[in-house]
Length: 148
Image (tube, rainbow, N blue to C red; front, side, top):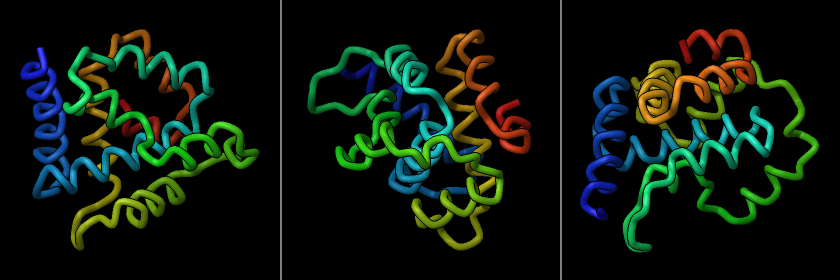
């Protein structure tokens, strides 16, 4: 089962690399975590937990799974992002892409928009269509178009 989970995550990151212009797993993982962090800032807490449950696949503690990419590894950031009043502020596409570019330290020449679309595509492959439609309603218009 752990092998299957590692393969599933590798496939997830491989999709992100293939569609984004990123060159390695480390960059894809960092960018994916930031896209997910920004998404969590846009989505209500109960939906965040539902998404995590749907992404969760049993794996030994030592193995990372897709749900681990969804969760913020920084405990303080994860806590404050759930209680922060800034969570309710609108995030437009410019802010979304600027945060991704800066927080993930995207390599020169890699477009935040392309990375976002790649992460969205890989994530949608992992979620039921109903959950995908629910997520779309929380995304700003320009970002929702990338969600597709």
